Image (tube, rainbow over all chains, first blue to last red; front, side):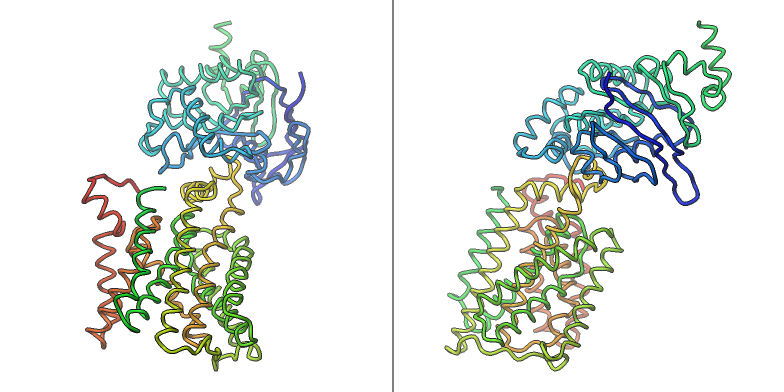
Length: 249
Length: 311
């Protein structure tokens, strides 16, 4: 498998707070990488750093053969990096359709608004929001807005998709639906890096897991190995989870 | 083209017929009406569409007035001078915007306000070029009589209004207008979908300045004498905002209606309550904004279509 993203020794600090410490990790084409860790571990900072929202303090980031260290957010977006936000960020006055059309319009050059709206319909149908296309984004439920985020990210035709807690705040039926969508995306060959707290979803979807703790990468490997890793259990999963897991075999 | 844009063009076309109905006074009022509408429409690009509350209108008005005034003094024709003011204002604003528009909300408002003071001081101190605090006398453009002059400047300002309206309509229907709407709603998300927000904002700021600069130029040629405290008057920054709010933020038709309404109120109040006119005008504006927070256009929508507005 070939690499699509490589972070080498990437650090980021906010004043005295070291949010990322020399993180070195590679993401392979077509895989679904789960990024887990306790709150404040630096998961979202990692995504923000790759996307150029908070540039790396040091280190290098290579995406699809290009050095993207220090590129601005809109530049990384046009190179094929897209993401959903943990806290949904819709264009509230726009209809769901225009939200997605905006993503299709600005991420690729030479797209007209009409063509973008047409593409947007397809993406809304895919995430199951076809019926809400003309509804204003502000009036959608949280679950729908999360799916709208996903449709926006997909409209950018991403090579790599970051999903930042797409399941947070959803009920179990909604989580199941979101999980099915992620499976479908993975089957379509989109490389996915997902930040997720629900271990059930992580183990169900991810082909590989990386664990961040205090800004450091403490484990990276096959899901079944990582969840047995003692430092991961200590830092994040807890003994109870490990025992339950062991009992289940 | 949407219905309100057609209404805007019809309204502007209607204004062009003004000389048929009145003498010099009506022409003077009509010229100011067109000028106010240009300022308000221009402010609406950066303030209404992109959501950046700019107080820099007076800066570019004064800049345009002085640029045209100085060029006219050196013997350049009026059309060339105004065109130069327009282009120079665009470039100046876009360049300044690239820096200033990194600030948001109140911070941007204050920074744009300081622009007026900076330019005023520059003009005050460049005595050799601008005459400094003594002001600048501008040679008469023609000399074919008072009424003919008044007619000429009315149509010059009207032409500028038409050009501004056409550009605004074009912007709103374009990728630029769509992008500005995205920026107004959520700038972080705009960047995230590949929109170069800084570039878009700078272009918007440039567009919001260029017709203001040209209007300043026509104004200077019209009144023949300008001084810094006149053309860099902070009221030129505040009035367009009030007009836009009165008419309906974001809607070009509403904004132009707001400009005309404002001028009507200003004139009416000034004529009837000369001693307390600014006080009365202030109270009227506060009342209007209190009872009609979304401007005249919301009134129309509510009355005729009963549509609720989500803001």
